Length: 482
Image (cartoon, rainbow, N blue to C red; front, side, top):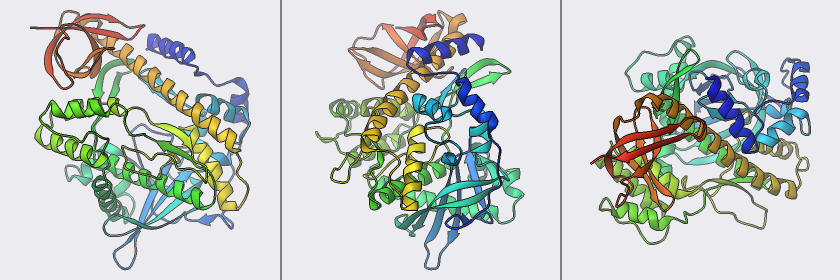
């Protein structure tokens, strides 16, 4: 673990990220005193609602809560509460300067390098169970078919009634396990979650009808025995994760439209039409499918749904290949007289990032814009500042992803160092002039195919032999067998 932490620190610095908090930021954090939440207009008191958080089992930096209520006529009101991080993290403080420098928390096999000091992100600005907290609330009136009929954004005081975890909640929703203890302990919470789940599934179905892409990327999570990494396993996607994903997509759309109505230029989250569409077309042709010559989200969504049904075992590898060819998301400033591209993968024209201010700086910036818009005040950032932040946040997000991949590859190289010469079943996840890449399952990682790569295409299955690892550089090299 010490070697991985040293690698993570080194790669972060090489990529322009700061792994340690400056002394001034730590002093500011230590001096903070928690003050009681006393609601007064325009702050609404919503602490009596059955708010819940749903996150990873080990997460303590809780950004979101949700609650639902039925409305006459069949509609359901969904409320999503987002932690008011700006209430404590003010602009131009040392804490804010560090957050603006890194722009994101960095999640690696060596540990989490948080954007905000731990006392803030996991305590004072976290929506912890049983704690009264300030929040921004995105209110959505959702019709029976899953469409949002009305929406609003306002400030409120909230209290988390139950900290729920994805895996346990998903097993209960699927009927394969009893209710998690925090859920069973609160009267009426079981029906509350059932309502949220039904609405989320309706919203999800409608998004997919409009061309949103259903992808299953095999992201690896480190498994520990004490301080030692013992495995990298694919993160399981489940119904509870879908619930939160659907609500957050909807809340981010509500935020973007609210700011636009108020005349505030939002930091849009954009995924442009893929430049490598011809390679996606070729990928489809390789499995006997046809896609149009020009980028078409609905056609791609239909192709992916078909492949999920016909070849579920290979679908994660196909998803990973499509994700790589789609390109990276980015932040872009949209001025009132301009129109930016939407999010190709979500089939959304109005989209921003606003639901994770403890973990992402663009969300904190958006929160400050929201609070000014709600109060009828001037925007706290000039357009030139927002444009520069959009570019900077995009660059730092890319750097953080490269750090995460490098450290995870180093962890995999460490696990595989004693297995040189061993043969693995693999799938091709990338094939271009830059190289050919394959993915193995145990541990879940990618490596470069250095011999026997001619004629291979994305999705091909083959046996490979491990020939070399380099922990410091995060290199894992394979050769084709047979």
